[in-house]
Amino acid sequence: MPREKGQKVVASNKKARHDYLIETTYEAGLVLTGTEVKSLRAGRATLVDGYGFIESGEAWLDAVHIPEFNHGSWNNHPVRRKRKMLLHKEQILKIHNKIKDGGYTLIPLSIYFSNGNAKVEIAIAKGKKEYDKRQTLRERQDKRESDRAMSARRHLGD
Image (cartoon, rainbow, N blue to C red):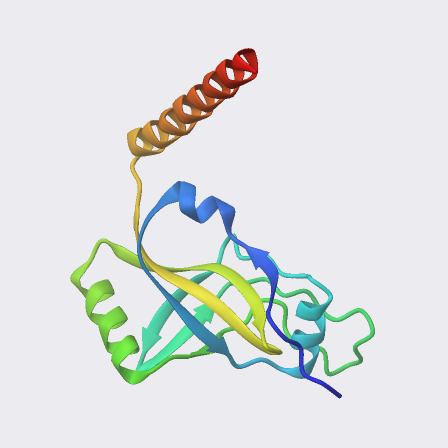
């Protein structure tokens, strides 16, 4: 059977970019069971409550919701379990040092398949304060209004 080519995004955490200031992103492989892979291929996963942590030199992803596979049997996977992330030792060390310093957390941004392999995009992020969130929304709204004005002016000039 030929392997898939390219990327297929299964789930993305849109709220993360609103709630956190993203500093550095990494791509990590995931250690999954067969029914988890089948459930992901069906496009079912939720990253909202998920977070990452480093424990005894290994990177872990926790509280990510991958629902049970519909056609699975008694050996279906637990829905929210600790899943190992595959990263290089240097990357794990960098992440660990950054999180240990305080104020930073490890959050999943998206789960996707890259050339047939399940991957997760994780980010070292710092939580935004409420006023930072309002500022971001205001900037986005101002940009949208200026784009609208520019396109209206362009259409009038035609």
